[in-house]
Image 1 (cartoon, rainbow, N blue to C red):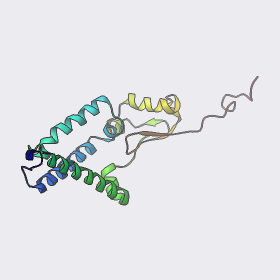
Image 2 (tube, helix red, strand yellow):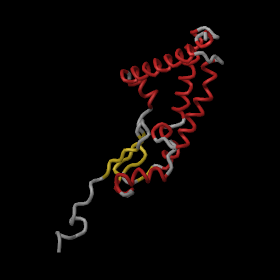
Image 3 (cartoon, rainbow, N blue to C red):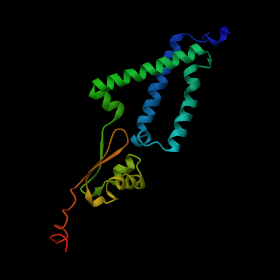
Image 4 (cartoon, helix red, strand yellow):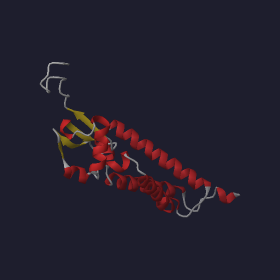
Length: 171
């Protein structure tokens, strides 16, 4: 029963391991692009589960005690709260952690090189566009990939009924 709570390493090593793994995984996810964070696909979920499994031994150092699990959990939750607090108070930290919005289209022109750099397929872009405007690229005033991975569209005003079609109203 005492094995459930006895640590095989000093407590501070668990804290240090958790901090290093937290920061390492955060950097890797940040480098993977906004889409991976903002638009979960089944593949993204599998990846996150596998990452969790891959870093487990790096954090616990082979220790399977409840004390180590609770210490690691407390450290990760504390680190997450600290990053959230710092991000809320510092624009520099927020930019580092979350990134910045990226312009991906303007005035009906889609920036293919930006889509490619941000790992957004044309199919994903068109799907997001269909949700706001039936897929008409020509009506895009600008489109922005937000820091959460979502695409925001600002559309040109639609033509006034009858004004663009040359009519003055119903026949």
